[in-house]
Image (cartoon, rainbow, N blue to C red):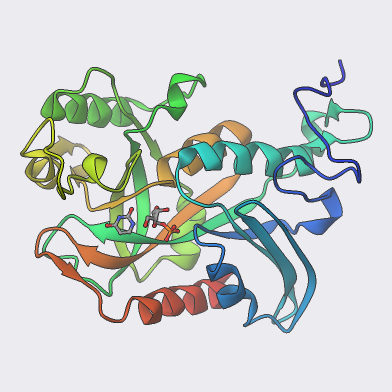
Length: 290
Ligand code: R1P
Ligand code: URA
């Protein structure tokens, strides 16, 4: 059955609705960033840039780095944008946009998607300036209320423990990212478990003028521990996209890794004075290891 025009929306030139891209625009290896202005910070290192396309917050540059074809795309903030990004990237490679038919299983393409983002550390022993690779992500957002994500026993235990600790009305979701990519690109980085929040202020325990429902939110996150045969699990950092990437990556069959430049420390109250340098060192390391 072809996918209806209302479900898989194409622009007049045949490009996909939000990303504004055609299948031959993208490479199998894709770096994603939240901030559209971070796209040229990545592509400035390319030997050459073959394509530059943008629509809304989705800015895409495609080019070559040391002979390898790389795509860099900005997503904006939040897992709602990651829903759009992951579904549209997958459709570009795994749906025939002319016949509107999904490709047969044996023709499916697995993308490698690496998020290069900023993040706040939850723990005093992970200082600003650290580079952190997310082993697991815990999603406090609602995206997985709408997809049948299959979680492992450990993932369910962790998510249930966090639900209890935070007295949440719903169970968060927990997903492990790509071990393959983490070993290849993040091998010398801090290994972490990332909390993906549906906001930057209240959901990450920041108080400006509004009180929080749970005043001890930050302490609950910092102190949360789960013991299992795999060792001790603790939450290490806050950001706003990783769990959405990992969950949709698992369901669609793509390898996904989230890398975090730690620019804030919520235990010590510090913000990095050299945040651009920290992000640039993460970009350089990522490009050299792809
Ligand atoms: C918040 O300031 C934004 O920064 C982090 C969060 O996930 C959120 O998107 O990532 P980026 O620096 O990639 O945008
Ligand atoms: N991004 C976040 O989401 N939180 C932080 O504290 C820093 C960057």
